[in-house]
Amino acid sequence: MSHETTDYTSFETAAQHATSRVPRFAPDRRVDAARLEMIGQRYECASHIMVCEDRHFLGLVRIEDLLSAPADITLADLMDAQAPIVAPGVDQEIAAWRAVNHEESALTVVDAQGCLVGVIPPHRLLAVLLSEHEEDLSRLGGFTKGAEAARSSSEEPVRRRFRHRIPWLLVGLVGALLAADFVGQFEAQLQSKIILAFFIPGIVYLADAVGTQTETVVVRGLSVGVGMRQMMGRELLVGLAIGLALALVAGPLVWWRWGSPEIALCIGLSVFASCATATLAAMTLPWLLNSFSLDPAFGSGPLATVIQDLFSVLIYFTIASALF
Image (tube, rainbow, N blue to C red; front, top):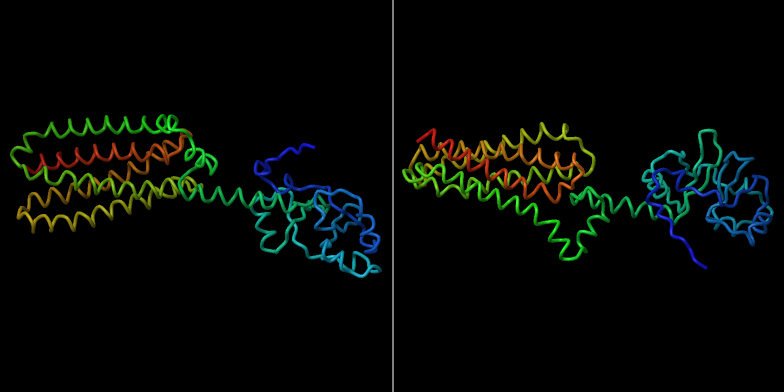
């Protein structure tokens, strides 16, 4: 005998998970009669016995209470009239957590008129909780396409891994060549002030580090549904504040170590401007990739690094040219 597997996680509301194949009795039914009638019947969920007047839901009796109750009392005497219920349109996650909070293995779905729609069985509640748990974990990890996509990326063969990653890295290679060309445009400044070359790695590193922090926050925010408008203002202010703080530290240190106020001013201004532009690039790229239905966790890192590096080199030498 074959059994088809249903993907309950594709459902979204309580009503879609509910089944009407549950034991249902009138409130005046005696316990012994209810137990006898259930023998030989096949239910999808028999952990809870619904007590209804016609279709109007009055309460429920848990199977363990039914089996241990005296035979001559009625279900009305035994039922829990305060059992938790949910409306048909309630989101599946809210429904599942309501069952957990009330320590129920199943959950009753009742419409606005008080009529019984069905019961969400234990195995469907578990499926919902597992699905929501994996989704939350994948979002925290920055994967907007869900845990299945993240797992697929981790298990895919070498050829596919190569094909998914190499395009972004080729973009990075082009960016590196452009950065070298930018530096070559300022050969005269480097020949007259060779000390300027000492600080290129530091300027580029600080901009990348600030951009990476911003990018992580934005990718995770987009993954959990936070709008770009909610993040943009705060992240810009943070980027400016970080840039200013680093500039105020770097300038005096460079002056003290190399004894040149002009170089110290150049480094301070470059650090501030590079960190500010890195923050802007790190916010914009994940948003653009997400708008085009591309996972920002894959593409925004390499692409943002290239753009930040190019801007950092350009800003640094532009300021140096103006000062020297």
